Image 1 (tube, one colour):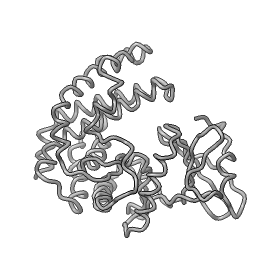
Image 2: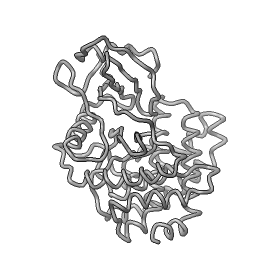
Image 3: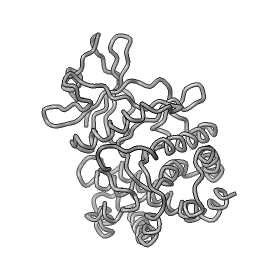
Image 4: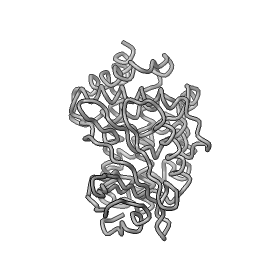
Length: 331
């Protein structure tokens, strides 16, 4: 979705006290996000690029409405109803958007160790809150451990065949093969992972989806991918976000993340044992998700190249540091 969007198609469906104005802010890779000001009030408009499915957004909003009734130490987005009484707004072509109250603060800084600890604690607090969630509809997104069912249409051969689409992807063919080798290794482990404790999870709790203010987590954003999965996946998703090429302190940072999480949630020995495999599941899911987006024409090849680089590096890092990682988490 480009910057020539006619935002009035969405915003004219809301009742603002003053005239609204659009301010460009950073968007995620799955949606288009814009700041909206109307007098002294500030909002966030999110336009969904992945789908035009009202049910997905309605479920997300039901969970957000429920979480807004809980005594959380941070805010979660509060959807605003439009003039028709709905929190889901559609353009004539079926594109879906939502408007939320703005949460004051800045994005959590991945370079700040204290923010790593805060993110771990927030992951635990959100896990604790979501364990009691009982929305009226079942989850729409499949759990990570059902990766083979979710991406049945993109088998190993089809994934690697994408390397023929451009010179940049061809240069990454070996990494794509390595990712599919990891996929094969995870198939038997997925059955064991599926036996772990399950609950609703955020599913994408990373630095870009958290807001910090006065050195505290002030907000957790982007609940689009909420689903029922093993509870340890919430921590795994966050831990994977720590893995970056060139960093030599990843283990220490993951231990710091885990320290914050463990103040709220204590994972079982079985969950800890399988955490490295759960982290790999997340990395593979991201690679396959963006491969689908590339096939559907939603992203250029440079986006998929970046995802392949990060996912392959992440899986290699987890494999290389598995024993030390388990030692850090169990100590």
